[in-house]
Figure 1 (cartoon, chains in turn orange, brown):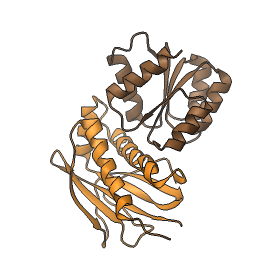
Figure 2: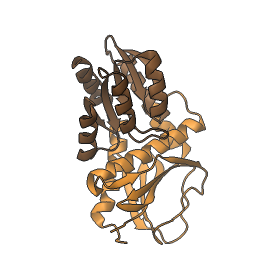
Figure 3: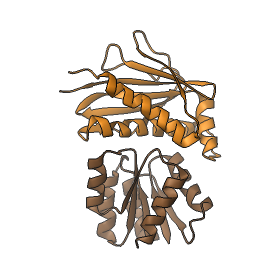
Length: 152
Length: 123
């Protein structure tokens, strides 16, 4: 299995930046990008999309409740119950994964998002050391974990 | 003009509904909201939408299958695909099946309004 390269990883950085810029009109600050060598502690709301086809693995978007609430409020959403926060973080993961097809090709298949509430939402499944992108948006921290490889 | 919104995300369904209701899209009324293709087909038979916004990645029945089913039921339905699958081949596949337009997620309210007007005016 071939590993992702820097360009592949950058598309996820660009994607989360574009998502927040378009939906909130405020760009996030990318605070770090590194190889996760230990168990990753994420945030309470997690959206997970699984890749198959040309690639294998998943992408996880992990955000604290206050950040997801802000994103919803800026879209004039009034339903701020946990179920809607989970829906939102799942949709963000779906958007990042879907946008990846533009660069990784149409042979990349993506699943519908799985939503997990709780701090243990991030588990590496494919790579020993998944790629981790951390960001700050409006004083709130968040994380995108890219745990995937090319099949060939 | 009756509009049906099809998307598995509640956030996206309510956002599109809000853009339509608050965005001054004259003559557009909401005919229904569906969270997957199967629900959309059932709802379309009852509400007879003229315009549909369609997600592609959904459980139960995805958007590609749903486009085919809706157009078989009523070939005059105008479908605007609203999807994160923004690669060219996906867009081309959707348009070949009969969709009239494509908006990539993430989208701004203005982008969606313009695309909806284009699809509505093409009727």
